Length: 137
Image (cartoon, rainbow, N blue to C red; front, side, top):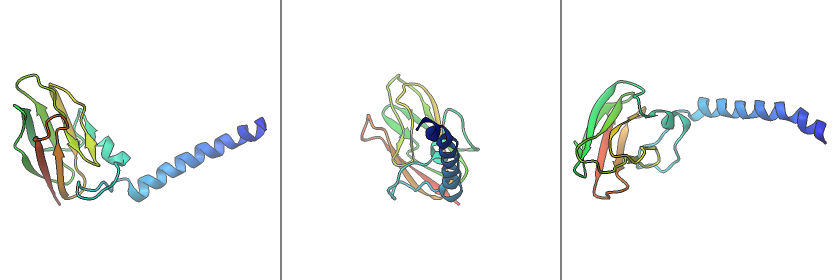
């Protein structure tokens, strides 16, 4: 039994890498806008974080419980930079089915958008805080 498991391990590792390659080839960048239900994929999650994965097309500030501006337009492949400013109040940026920032009271967070569409986002802590990113081709 032990030798069977020992010999199966390389096959399982190869299968896992093959499955990952298949996902990347078939759907690596198919993140849907907010209006279409789905779960985040690796390419979309990797596009969010503390540094932009492309040129910054718009800057949004989080201050006094609002996003300013609340609507921005960018082109596919560009990033939006969210900046925490003003009073130290915790906020986050939640783009449903796409990506979410950590809850923080200062700093910056980026997300790069690879597909045209309208992406609605919100702060989970302040339900009246909503915004929209219009991604053009």
